[in-house]
Length: 113
Length: 113
Image (cartoon, rainbow over all chains, first blue to last red; front, top):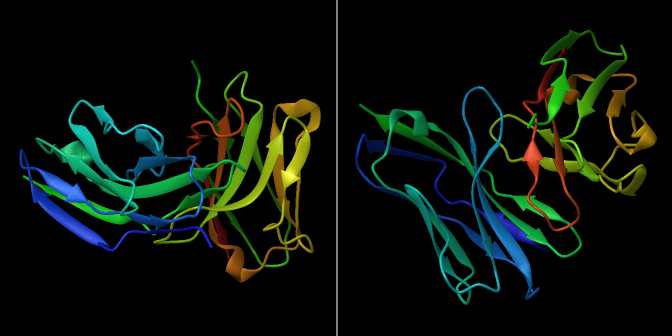
């Protein structure tokens, strides 16, 4: 079974500090995509960052970057210079060639002033 | 560019009543998804459309749930009759094609009393 595991139900960070959210996944496929989505209290899922498994270079989007370790099947999200607006649920997800998207259970991140 | 639109945002009904949700995907997106999101969990796929064809409905409880995507654009998801356990958020997403990034709507929060 293809699963995504987020082992941190809740995390908190001080404003302007850096925080890393963990994600591991399990698949036997070689081609897939990995995502981090953010879901604020307004409920809309917003794409944060995307990584193609065939690319060795870690994806970055402004303050957001990933540490993609393909052999370890690990895909962590680093948020630098945390802002109050980063407070949300963060979901790690994997997408396979059959268009099967699997989500983790989420990590609730709170940025404290 | 407009995002994925869903309505209503909230719906409260009594058990055994019917309910319908509507989704308008991003223009030009051929693939449309309906997800169920229970409180504190990640989304789970109910059904996926490629244009007007339902290509993956294996997780859709067909005894009470139905969906349609006439003309391959808008989609409706129906529950009849609703049960207490159907209380959840119903998310719609769309993507340009298979194995593409999915973009989510704001969701419909259903409460069944």
